Length: 481
Image (cartoon, rainbow, N blue to C red; front, side):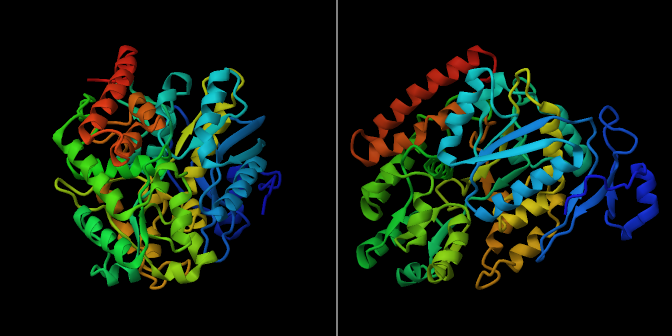
């Protein structure tokens, strides 16, 4: 329900005193705002509309600054479609409440990076707020510094998760080039029946077991594995997880390039063996949805992905969904780490005419309601501020969206222990963002797996390309090392 004048002509504070917790708008809590941001009446949260079917209610705080005009938002088409149905209504409801005309444009995930780059390069962006599901640090020179927004959010909700902070903050410039209030874990998704037959009823726990079991399944059950080596987001994530677990990385914590190492070469050698024994050449041409589609169709034994493929399978192929289970990051010779599957980078272009005040106020409203985002994404979206979704662990213990068994998603409760940012062990600086955008790591693995180069040659070529990128950004003062 949208109420354009919730106070019936009264001041907001007098209205709250009159109706208390039983009126159409119920008081649900308060917290102090930063003195520089707050107005006298902006410290009370009220219910804007009630949740249904177990969904959390929508909570509302008066904006800390006066907002008006149009707010145009560009973001991906969510892998869990129910989220977009919720988000569009949620955004319009907020706009109606505060007097902002909000429009939302969704496009396919593979089209978002080029759309963002094009709008920023034009100098006259069509949207005030741009969102992508991976780091966009390469756009730092052309976007608004979100430091004040982050400080305000932390004053309300506590410290931001370190994973998302490192994915939105550049320590070399002290600038938050993005706002990252939510993220998504990247577990392994495996078919239990196939892996039980191969001798691993709980799925693989190590990269060695992945190779052994996946090879057996491919040879004896005719079902391949689905780890991409193409120029798309999932392949980027998978390659990094393998490298880190072998003790390799693109950069060290001081942002010095350390890619060309024995550990990286060993990881590339492993991926080549995995491809030769458990996969087919289609993994070199995959899009972001390919492993989802393969798992849902029952054609893959294991993928590295979020729970989105599983949620889709619940609707279109329940038999496969019942057979899909999850593993945490696989253990390698050095450790067990995975990249966050999705990282929400919200950007405000730094150009005249952009409605930056409304954009940032909307993001505070979105953060206030992260519990709704998590619920309507069917537990896909996780919060960067833990207290915003206090029921998350209970939901994971007893999935409200029909998992059998209901405890199937419990493995995600420990995801902050094994998930990290794409720049690990350093930050996701602009050079890392460009390396990700150009898919240099998946290409490195693919060149070796296809036999075009030896593992050592593929690593050396990747290092050369990455060095040029780092040198460029370092020369601009945006990368350390």
